[in-house]
Amino acid sequence: MKTIQIIAVAMLMLAFLPMTVQAENEVNSETTYGMYKVGISQPAHTVAKNAPSTYTIYYEELDVPVTVTVFEDEKCKNYIVRTGNFEVQYTCNGKYFGVKYVDAAYATIPLQEMKAKIDRTNFLYQRVITRKLRSEKDFVRLIACYLPEIMNA
Image (cartoon, rainbow, N blue to C red; front, side, top):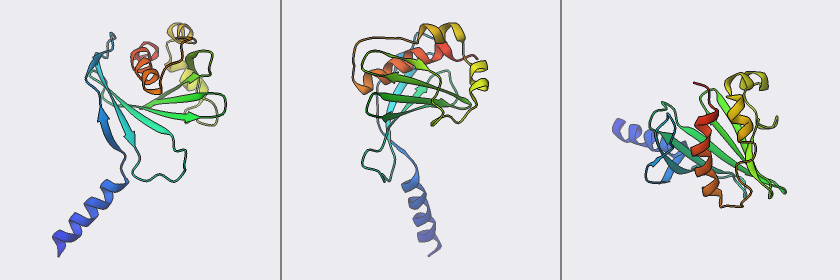
């Protein structure tokens, strides 16, 4: 009886955890973080019809994974990128794709604290990464390549 209870609790816990359903082959980020993989994560329970897409980036030389959550509004897609105590936002607004500080509505870390953690020069270079429209997954791959350049170690 106790075994059945333990199994039931374990299954219940797993049901509430996000689950990676697909991972790519490793790709070299050409940065100090080395190789990376992108996994598509899906929450176990979706409440809203337009639930955000979630991706996880695993770097060879970074201890914690990077989570990319994609929110879509009428003008653009916002890619909220978080890892540990670091967060930035990449935006595709139909004209260009680039980095910016996280909008106040999504921010979990104070702006001044984030400014101290970002490599300012590379952040400015990434304000416009491309003017070509690409797929959501392609933009996540671009984030995986460009993100390490703005993270101060």
